[in-house]
Image (cartoon, rainbow, N blue to C red; front, side, top):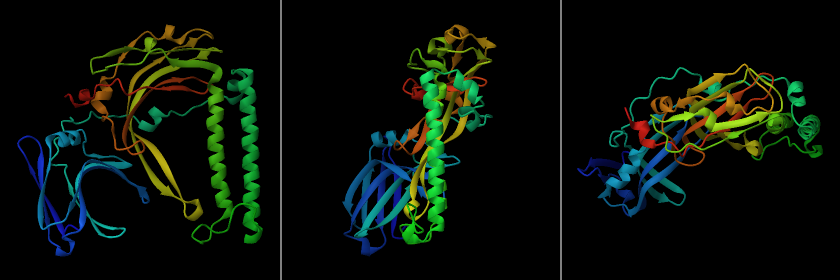
Length: 375
């Protein structure tokens, strides 16, 4: 539609922008339209679900030429945005004109504001860590040793979850196999067709269901297996800047029912790319949310030979660490909704041999945002 409507921005002395909208296609005159300043998250996928947030929106009737003034205050809100292109998402700010040409039909013209929104965000420091391995390390544990380390009620719950989960998976596979072999009118649960009437494999649907069951059962079992110890925050961080020093022993504590051999206490932070995409077809079509770690830094790491059972772990970690590497290497949080955008997360991890690891998700509210913009 760029050949029908053109957008010409002009920056004002006070930081605002005047947008001149020129209409070349006279058939659009008199149509209802909207002009908006929009921050958008685009998902890099073959079947993406994008999302956006309007920073300013004006409804108008199209004429040959008209101007819209966007105040410095609105542009200041937009300046909290910065162009971002990661492995799973990209974030940009646009000026957009959308004309309603007919019921359920719109024509859209966009103009990128990347060159009109000043970004004071310095170049990020280089990161060498594998973000996924740092924020979600491989958890190696001995199931039977872990099982005997948790209270009796948690042992029973874990075994029941294992039995119930296995039974559900076997039962679901039997249904899938039966429906695959049976004529359509004799299927029990899984149809040979999707909601669009196209052929669909019952056994394929059953395998997808088994995957979902296994994921949920493992999540629930892991919660039970972590009961060999208590692990929690002692305090919340408040007003953290580049110069702040945080004592790890005053931040977290806990105690274990068993000796912890070679435990490693770590503090890590990362940028998480968030969005959604479509998977499956017909009746199996679904929207999937994702969180993809892209950049990560290790803020603190310390290994202790042994922490005896019942001993408060904060007695073994009396050191300070700084969030300065996070402010230097990671991007500030930039979300357009709860599901889409660039998130900033940090967590405390306790990695233990032969036992399921522990983690605590930290609060983001204590970080002073302007510290990300300091050189």
